Length: 511
View 1 (cartoon, one colour):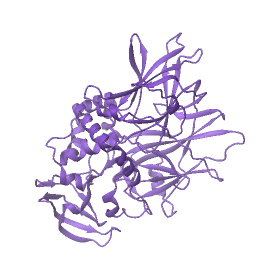
View 2: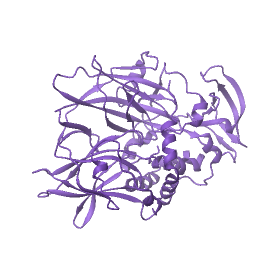
View 3: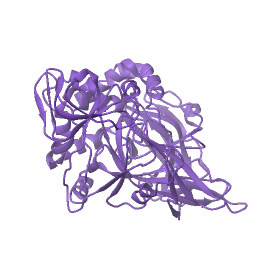
View 4: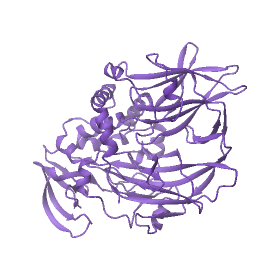
């Protein structure tokens, strides 16, 4: 992530009173001070081996000290160790059990997907963005799942429009990968099938409900804050996207960090709303915020903040209010002499283009609406903005998983069962693992069109990199302030082109 930490107070209250999780947690430590980690810890090393400290570990003088068992790349040939140089550590995570309610999660792992990828590959990887989904034998990037759910508390459901179509046997097959230094916990996967006319377009709305639209036109008078005409840039889903001009980023201040786009949207005759269509994705600004401002500087304090810190309602409310104000794409309508926010599009992640509809309410007698899009400077890559002439709710057919296979084609029935319902069962994947999911959607009726959407639920945890552990300097955990956001924007602006290039290239290889 790359991403803002997503939280809403009501969600926090609901989830914290619900399920209990066995979770793997990242446990960073500060090398300049002796720090004792009391929970069981895994240290992933650059040579591909893993050291398990079942009773915790002490970090002191640039060394991991404790009774550990070292396993090779295949997680075999155990050997006892006492001291490990910290500069040989790629990342650390704890696997302690924590109780959050009345039920205990059942976490399963893939049988045939092999061991974790070698530490040498992990050492250079910077890619990180939750589970990634592919079709067509890995040639088509389809989606990144629950990209805002960076801890169990923030487990959420995503719905993503797919381009994938079934094979000759009526099986729609997707490949899911863990290409990041993260541990993924997948709770539920299912497909929504929406039949529609050939001239209709299907996509999720801001509440993850499938909708069907037609007659999409580019809105009139679409300009940015500088008055630049964006019609040619935003008129089609062609990869020619809008991003904030560098000069605006360079001049940003705590009091003025938002970019904006203005346009006029027609209201269909007799309608009480108009529907906006977007194709967009996040930039890596939110990744910079997460890595370089929230986690890396704080060291051990970052985990205290992510874990027990955010379990306090006061901290959750503070972060939630900041996030609601700063993250996402805010859509406002001009009424009574001012722009008033009516809808907000959540962050979607930086990897794949995301299609989403926003239904904007109209008052009786309104034939057009003055719309303003507001967002943190350079937070978004916007490929298309459209206005639909007609919109209707979809009545999707829900299709459950029919099969799961590992990377070698062997059945993974336990993994299939773990993802068959949104319950207390999870499939855990580690960096470098992948698996394939099949949905029996049947044959497409002659002369008919249908679109498929992937519904997913789960969360993931970031690994604390060895380099972060060694360089940790902050004396306090992260506080959600606009000053921290501006610092991330400045850092991002100085490195965005090379960072984007490296991010796309430096993914953890799957096998």
